[in-house]
Every structure is written in C-alpha cells, then in structure tokens.
Picture 1: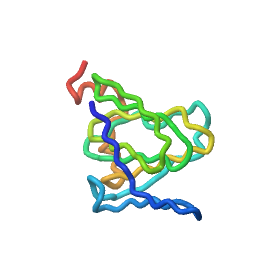
Picture 2: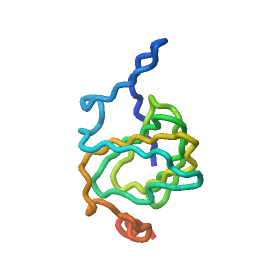
Picture 3: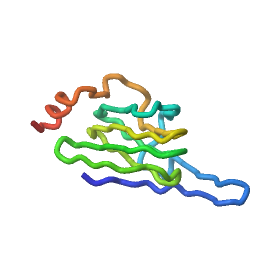
Picture 4: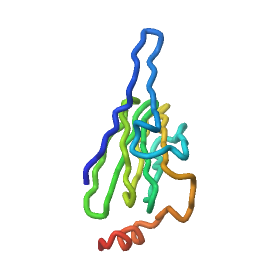
Length: 132
C-alpha cells in the first residue's frame, strides 16, 4: 500500500501564511468538508472504511497519527504540516490517534454523507477485501 501525499500550495507572508485548496487541483471534486477538534487525549477517531468515498486528510493545527490498512499491510504516518495532506483511497481502513493538544484535522470528501458507504466492522472489511 502506497501513501499518497498531496502538497497544498501556500503563500508565506510575514502577516500570516495562506494555504489554498481548489477542486481543479485535487484528485476528486469536494462534496463535503468537516473537521475534528478538541479530541480528548488518548481518543481515537475513524475505525472504518469507505466503499466509494475518497478523502483528503489535512492537519490544520497540531499533529496526529493516521493509520491506514488494506487488510494485509498497515502503515502509520504522522500528520503535522498544514500544507501536506494524505489521500485515502476507497476500501482503506483508517484510524486517527495520538492527537496533540489543540490538533485540528480537516477532512475533504468526494461524496456527501451516506451511511451505506461505510464499513464499520473490521471482520466485514476483511471479507469484502477477500482477506482472512
């Protein structure tokens, strides 16, 4: 499993930096945006996969670990740079953990919310990916 990093263009300025995300520069059209914040110490988020949804995970502030699993390979990356995000492909199990104080995780999604697109059970995920 390859981790696909997406570099986010930014303009550095002594008055403050500006990062820009545009649909035309992303591998999918943004249909939904949400963010995680005030995640209590020791908490985990995610713990699911999506059948058809693509996501770009961006650490707007602070840091956290992103764990990606395809059923065989598991990779963990630390996200801490607001100008670099990770593209999560379809049928990839994801977990977020080890949030620093004040961390904010931005998620850009290729689809609007659809509960039918979620796989929330690890055993079901392994069956759907034909891994046992």
